[in-house]
Length: 473
Image (cartoon, rainbow, N blue to C red):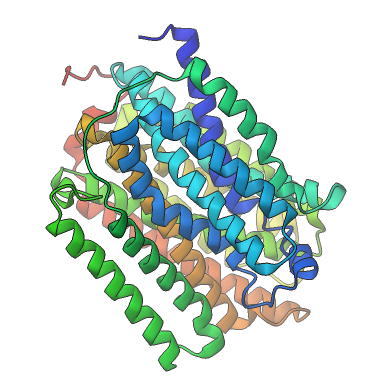
């Protein structure tokens, strides 16, 4: 067992890893107009600076979890940082659309190795002590939405005062620090025999990518067009092939029977819907601040800092106590319901609105909902799996959140565009489009609350309760 101080230093590095891999989804948001101008992106392809990362990240997470179980979490953690470093260097130096999107996909591949191995390392370090595990998960959980929101702020600062390539290059010194610290802080772990389902990883990544591409392109080519339905049908076929491959293989990428574990599937659905509601919220809130209220890059990012602070306080101080008192299920349901209320409030934004009236109170309500729902759903998903499948469970829950984020953003982008968000300069039309996206995201959050209430089992409370001891094994 590591010394207590060393374990908490290790947790700091694990939380940093989670912060960075989520930050990399959002830090490019403010920089997108300048990336578009410098590299020649068309308006319809610009969202792929975001989607190339998220699709590679979400599609390869299951493979990353499997590699973590087979080759050791510490080894995959370090490998992921190295790949992220390479992708970040190339993304900042890119001089064409193809190079930029390829580098973003490489970044996503690195993140897909970091995220599940980080969660496995956390469980290895703190899993034997329930109270410490809940505190560790709280810090880890706070790093995710904080990274997403803080990424917008940092992106604004860097874009305004440095240059857009540094939204990628900022990863380089952090990755070097992580690579130097990993051998000293992380438990070595072991390896075990097994095979890799590379074809399964390929089919799930192709399926997810096709689904996102089809939804993103639908507003431009038409939902009724043959191209839209052909791409979406291809996505269904690829994902169906993935399930068939998993059912047929002796050593699949995902053992399908793992979803029979009580609460595992339900908690992953909650994480998927949470990502599908939260990510579109900050994406369109940032656009509202810039395109309607007229904020420049730096003020736009700073306007989201109150959300970040509330999320961190809520996850670290409030969520563990609430889980201890009420249990995981009530917190997931309540958090998603509060998030839905916040999104409904944001849908009331006005063309002549203000930050203090239209943005701040509603965004804080949404942030409170996120802070209540994220930790219990994450902890429930991880604790429901067998210990030897910790990497797989980590990969599944990270995949659920990232897939939800990608599909939710793609769907809400289509909703916003159909309601007028593609008419730059027309403030009433833009506001109507962003409002429609907030309404759609709120419906997703409300559906998540209802689904969690119907499917999560309250009996799982003891496994995520910080105040009660959990029997060994």
